[in-house]
Image (cartoon, rainbow, N blue to C red):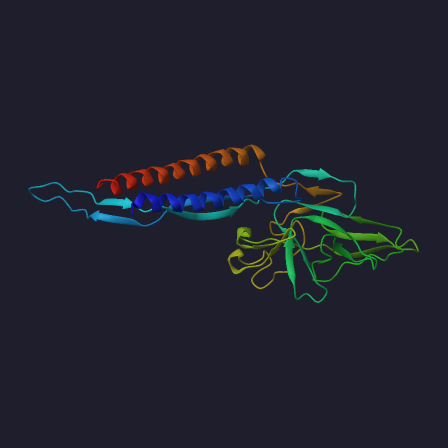
Length: 273
């Protein structure tokens, strides 16, 4: 069987994966704080027909003769560039201006996740939660932030301090929202619902090895908080549609290679009639 056919088949598979990533980017163009991904390719094995040789006193050197056998996925990268600001007028909607993630999890801290999507609100007990899944928003000490349901008002400043006016008119601090920053955010694992889970290649959190609960906004390179606003998706539709066209043409070209190989094989089979 012709090597070119197998090379083209590998290209079809991987161009389909690239189209899947592009389609997911476009599907999430309006997803809060969504971070787009890209696919890169790399060549794979080569069959060496003849090795190279060095020059001698009587003859010059020759280069190796190699035939490639196709391509494969190189990387699927995530772009963590800042999305645009979308003002909402809702006091519990938060976005991070700069690097970092909000820290959310369950009540006992056995499940910890990170998110850029600050679609938060208070539940019936006054706990600050992620509205999409009910996970609690942690403060810098790993505690749940609570504002009494009978509070007159509340405020969240750019450094994450949550303050409220109690029923008797006294100003009280409920906690400081934590932000986690990692050396390599692309090393985090996406788990859906705008959440990331820690993985070893993300590196230590900015607070030091073993501290994955985050720290104070604005410290050690962490971003600050913008209240009453959400971060928009960083998907660039012009780029995605351009990549879609390039991927489609690449797929078509490799499909044509398979068709041509098939025609050549047909000629070979028909040599004897």
